[in-house]
Structure formats: structure tokens, C-alpha cells
Length: 292
Image (cartoon, rainbow, N blue to C red; front, side, top):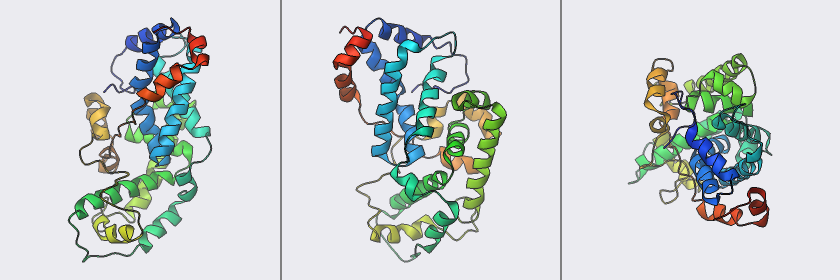
């Protein structure tokens, strides 16, 4: 899978060829361009809002924006990946708050709720290990959700996906110094609260995911048949980042960030049928003078 944020030399020819083909009326090129980037857009959206349905809607909205603005893209002004992910970042930072953003928005309240969840050291279930991973992944995503959107975006781009400050600054339309500051502030805040409660970050902390499984299950928020966050057989974020980035980051970030990079990189819902329907609409056909 192509990582659009890799710092290795890439003249972007493959994207540019697709863009030109799109503008020449090639419907298949439009579909290929959208499908090429949908997984990364989806993962940014999901990790920002913590809900698969919302993330799918956001991804579709962004892809439509990409397609309708494609004629305004000028290679001389920016690489295609920069142009596209500026659209992604701008859309996500300015969209209406999603349901989990309304529910989870404050560290003190969130941590207090976790601490109030009763522990059960005696609970035994054949899927306890699996469910504990679901609790862990969801809880860590909730921690990120407590950050304000700009800090959350910088944390995801710079901390989780390994985007360097220069590119991160371009995407967020701020200075590299401001990007580094937002990333540092977000990382410090998440680390501070997790250091104070999470047993995965500090073994001396009392909170254990396995001991919270029964409480979440009793509330109807947890079930092995419907995992919202954990993907046992799925790809991890660190696996799609690229070896060169990982070598650099290992010397820069501590194991705290590694916890987030070990989370799933989610498969995007199959949008081929949706895209096919969009591209058959008269507005799109007229916009791109599409031919089969």
C-alpha cells in the first residue's frame, strides 16, 4: 500500500498521470485515483472521530471534494498529495462535531469515567484476551479524542503516521514551528494522562484492560462478535508507514508512541460501487466530459 506521507524521493508521476487522465475524461482513472487514497483518508477520519459510519461519510465527502476540485489543481504549486491532504485536513478540522466528539472531549472527565468502571479480577471468558485488546484500542483512541482538533490532527499526522514537521505544517496551513508545538503539546497531554492511569504505559498503574472487560460487556459496549476497534488479523499502522520512516522514528520517539502505531490501520469500506454511482451522475459526466 502506497504511503502518501513517505519522505523518500517520489516525483508523484503516478498521481499526475491519473489526474491528467481524469481531466481528459477517463472515468476509470477517476475511480483509480479515488480508490488509491481512500484508505489513508478513511484512517485519518476514523482516528479523528472514533466511529466507522462517521468515518465513511467523511471519506465520501472528501472524495467528492477532491473530484470536483481536480480541475483547479496545479502541479507547479504543490505535489498532488499535499493538495489532496490539505483538503482532508481542512475538511476534518472544520466539519460539524461528530457523536463521539460530543461525548468524549475532556481528559479529567474521561479518566474519571475509566477509573469508576468496576474492576473484576475473577471474570473468566474464553475471549477475554481478545476483548481486552478491544478495550485497550478503544480506550487509547478515546484519549486522543480528548485533544482539541488541531492538536489531535497534529498528534495523528506527526506522532502516529510519522509526517515530518515541514509537510505537516503545509497540510495544516501553519508554520513548522506551530506544527511542532501542537504535536508536542498533544503528545505531552496524552502521555501525562495515560502515565497516570494506564498499565500498558506504566506497569505500576492499577488499570488493566482485562479487569475492565466484564464491566464493558455488562453495559452492552463489548462483544467478541462485533469488534469496533481491534483487528486481530489486520495490518498495523507501523506496517504501512514505510521502513525508512520507522528507522528514523525509533530513534526519536519512545515506546509511548509505539503503542499508538501498533493499533490497526483499518480497511476502508468498499467504495467501488458508491464511486461508480457517483461517476454516472450527469453532473460528474459533464464536469469531466467522461467517457468509458
